[in-house]
Image (cartoon, rainbow, N blue to C red):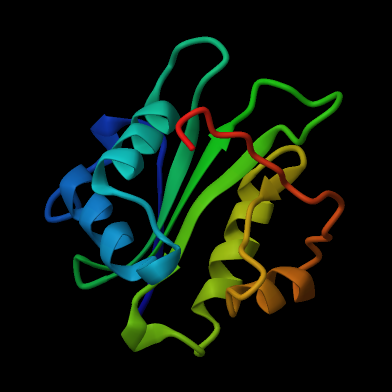
Length: 149
């Protein structure tokens, strides 16, 4: 049976559930929508920080010491003009997809998080429909300027 574990600091990682295991899980199961291990690690470091203006948490869906779903939420430190939290990563193991685990992860973060939540999703990501069904709305188009291009 799936158990949901909230990780608020590095000391919350126990047993077979490790930071490296979480990073590897996200790297593998975000598929083509993912980032580098370095980027995931940097995000986890931000979420686990106790510095003012930083922080957040990870939420894991675990069964028999094996991760089947994971979320990393970060605090933005703002609330007047952007949401207080940003859902950076959410992934479900390929074996558990289309069985409702993604929706259960979202319900858990809605229950745990005080304040509004934002996320970025690519238009062709199949998870976009789940986010819309769960109440996320597309308010803005994101635009980025890159000095390296």
